[in-house]
Figure (cartoon, rainbow, N blue to C red):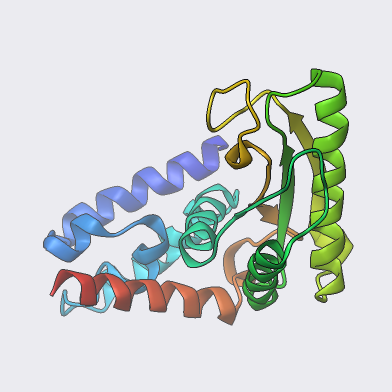
Length: 215
């Protein structure tokens, strides 16, 4: 974050303090993603909501906060992990079902990019398992592409092999034989007014869901 951005945020914070922004139960539970649509809805003032919208754009100028919130939403809305049979990179019916749900979600946000990470259990050498993890990640990517997702949006195919087990076991642990799909960033930069209607709609949806869960 450069000095100009820091100065803008600092000055805006002082203005917010002067405006006397409300601090109710909804505001305290808002994430950055909610801030734009929901933080000042019940204040009764025009200036603060406008300023909050501006601050949200500044806060997401480096994309970091919005990517984190979208990654959390992806993980909440659909399963991010599929599993494999021992020493296999073949997709079974359950894995294909999960990947189709991932593809449906990904299609809603055409400017997001994703990484697919491959893993194995602890049976066999790490070198062999790293190759197997890569085959699993490649197979996952290929299936997502077959569902209509551009290969350019699948930012990288990475294999962790056996180095990050969910269950520490020398046996054939199915939970460790997996790929994980994660949001990795935007296909292009979103700064200021570039934040398009799809993401604004997501902000509003998340705000409404927060209000409903608080009732």
